[in-house]
Amino acid sequence: MDVSESASISSGIAVRYATAIFEIVQESKDLPKLEANLDDLSATLDDSADLRELISSPVYSREEQGQAVAAIANKMGLIPAVANALSLMAEKRRLFVLPHLIANLRDMLAEEKGEVTADVASATALSDAQATKLAATLTASVGKDVKINATVDESLIGGLVVKVGSKMIDTSIRSKLNSLQNAMKEVG
Image 1 (tube, rainbow, N blue to C red):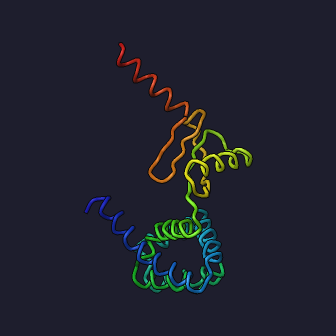
Image 2 (image 1 turned 90 degrees about the vertical axis):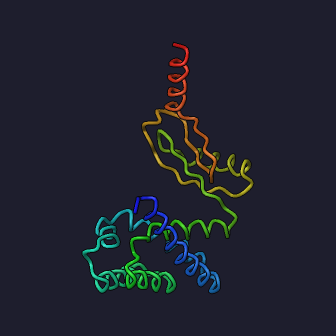
Image 3 (image 1 turned 60 degrees about the vertical axis):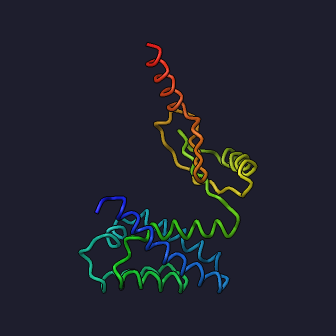
């Protein structure tokens, strides 16, 4: 099995769980709570190496994983649909798909709200004014509300790399220097 197969399997499992959670939460009209839970869960996953190890390591038994996610869900105040899904995922040894699950649920929430997420990499952190102006410009271009997911990549030197759906706009200095270098190679 190669890496693309395991990524595809993880994605498929995550989509099934995400769809079930989303439909349950949508019926109970708890979508804002789901969004808040996803933000909290994502932040916890980013901040805790122990949690990342718990969900990916085969060393922990189903019971240990189940007890740990139940305690986490209780402590974080996760809505029942999310807490129950995490418990089921622990029971079935599927916690390793949690990052994919969060991403899929975010996509479903964005689609429900008529939003699209733009991944923006910049050489320095965007100010609030810059992020607002960029979001407005992208909203006008795309025709949907745009939520910006900003990251800093100092190797860009300057400019931005914007990804919206399958489109990518690269206005970085690094990209321009690479293009110039390739043009010079063709001439010489």
